[in-house]
Length: 407
Image (cartoon, rainbow, N blue to C red; front, side, top):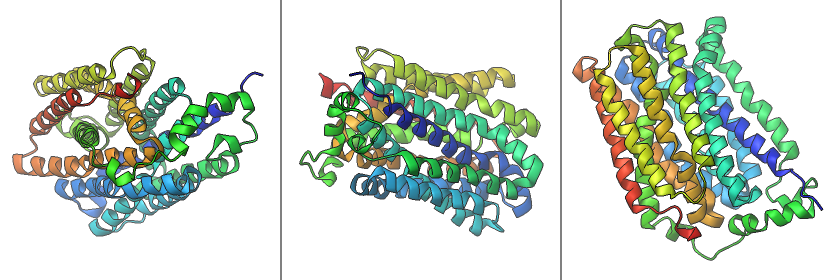
């Protein structure tokens, strides 16, 4: 009997949601200009708004991961996608700094449940060799969704204004939920499209993620590996959040680009980052993942360090895009390491790493805005801090062995 291929539809759902999530998340960076003008916000205040997402995203990671592990991926993903889509729409109704901050905080709380539960979903529905590639594809499509966001947001804002534009973007999540609910089951064994041969392929994956392995979740989170994994992800995210917050403003102010040109260039880091995830996923498992991660982060640190001395915007953006490519080589590695450590608590461990990492989503834009206001818009200082963060991430991987469980 040939195995059915129902598991590949789970990959399709993950890829689609990753793209939708990033489109809705990144759109605000393109709308920052008109939002700041209409609501009268300074750079520090806009940085605080950007940071609201990262703060709530981090704070709600572990609760959302625990809910996914206890209540199942189907329930939690349905709820959080509808929740964050509602607050995507409500972003268009903000009337001052406080209202915009609260809306973005709630939006981040909803999105916090996405990737830990997608990781659990892929882990129970795919064998190891396919899981690594699927993680790579998921992050690539997420990045490409983010890459599509600047031109999409620019077009939507041009047609409808920023307020109605966020309302329009919210319907992407509603459409995804309506299809996902009809098809998905938490356990492949419960799905009528999965035959016995395909279920046999998934036996080890189901045992890894769906069965109790006897270790309390809170003890698991006290392991040194998880702390170091979270630190490297914090530093990775510190650098990455520049691409989805301050990048359009940097292009306009430091290089004098128009809004249309800014939207075009802002695509590049996320576009190349997606290819970095793809390349990482297809590197043979015999190549030590630790050294892939170290090489990627060192490449990022060096490339960003060079950018302040470059005057040509095309060269500067090429360097930034390659820096994103290098750092995203580590994404499938980081998230698959969560599976190997977490087992049935995959969503909880993933959410812990993502929580520690995404505190940078609060720190980076807020600190960036503070630096700019205090230094008279000296963007070079912001870039130097990004390079330093990437170097710290590289050092962290000297203390993590993602291949240990397969040794």
